Image (tube, rainbow, N blue to C red; front, top):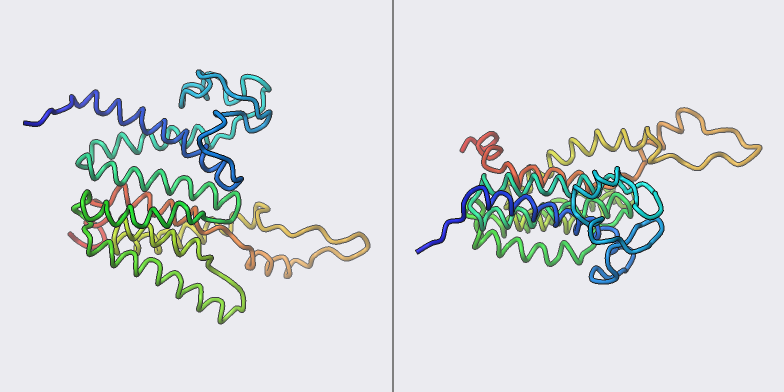
Length: 279
């Protein structure tokens, strides 16, 4: 005998849970690279560092009600907080309707981890192993027991191919250019993606991530992300041709683009698989 939850109640729970996890994901992304505990102290303003009242922690509504500013010091609250809460809430709601519950939970766990990884890599140019290493094992177990469209064989191949291909690419780049082109953090990230989504997810993530990464990398450099320090007083400014070369040498975090691509595949795997594998 099974107890079926009314659709409306289940959808509401999924949305609220997704929003709460989005708030938690932003907190983890802020504290983890700063070696702060994710348990205590309670949530605080990143500007004045004073503890937030309980109602200022309500996902989505608090940001809208406070118009994106701290209730105590008036400093702007990073928009990423609202985006994470709303984004993961919508993702959780969609997954609830699109997949069986165990499969939906596994995919949502991956999406939350990808969100954390993307923020940390964008801010700090690093991807914490404390997320990707356990995430790879969790992904393999989830694919083997909760995700019938993936399965343990595809998951295992995905882990080996995901980590191996990107590592090989980075090694070849280092031989040719004499400097690191792909960090090990990206390697472990793709291994985690392979654990959850299998080899098909790895290839999609590599291709789609590279495409949006190339576009984002150019925009990142042109908008100042790769700008070099101004020339010392009395020395000529950088030649335009040298500036073009500097853009090509700009180190752009690859993790956010891989995370976005993997998240897209996790949410829309049936449609994408049918589209590019014809099944």
